[in-house]
Length: 371
Image 1: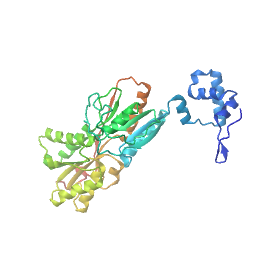
Image 2: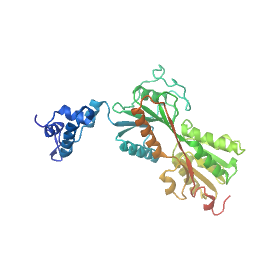
Image 3: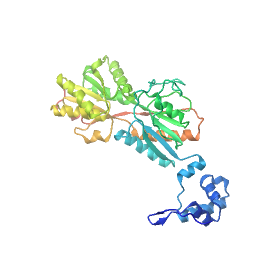
Image 4: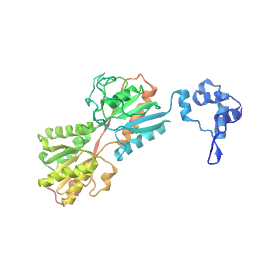
């Protein structure tokens, strides 16, 4: 059998499966079995093929292997966005775990659908997100047809996105929302401990009626949980939070700056404590304070969320609630691979804790005067 005349790469023809078969004195079908189902081949034959593969430097075509074995060794991750350190850290952890376990990842994003039907963020009953609802709009563009499993982050109500994920008939792991459906594993960030710790940290320096929570979108699940814990912690301290002590907008520097500007106009930014929904919002508040010559932390205390690199780069450095972003990505991939290996095992919920990291923006020891 003549060797296949593959196109040269950098002036050198890549070895083909036919070349391996000739070198090992076996058929191409035998080479394929050794690469995909070695238990079907005698140990002696398998060893001959492996030696030929090494000597020739043959690299199997992963796509062709996937067609043969119906396993691509590729996992899909669908995220709301890939901009910013939160998502890059999550993907870093996911990629490292995938490589460690012999997989690759395919990353995609899903734009928010204004027409998508709402879903309840906590403890969804079985069948609550069942596919086939006639009221749902047409399919969007979630394209993961060549993966063995899918990890999908749902941060806001989006039944359309969930329906598409389930219609792929793949093992699925969901991030950021708890879904009570058989065979669906969930990876959750436990916002409670870190939010409570941050609120109590601010309460140690300020009266409860001087504290504010400035979150992202009101419909965002993390924003909801953090806002709820903020209110509960104040209530435990004997303070009933006013409506104006919680504000909702976007996870952006611009939103933080805009919110702080409204308090500046009311001459109310001095002498307060702010728990921001993420570090970008916290930075916006900090920039507005600096533009107004308000000293941080002497006249204003700020705590961010996520503990991205931004928190330690700005001055004063930002206190922030650490979210284990890389660990979230790694847990999603690990759980998904376990689900692929054991499709019938009971669904699991993995909760990863948050923790306050105190820096200059709220540290009373960093303040020269104090309130």
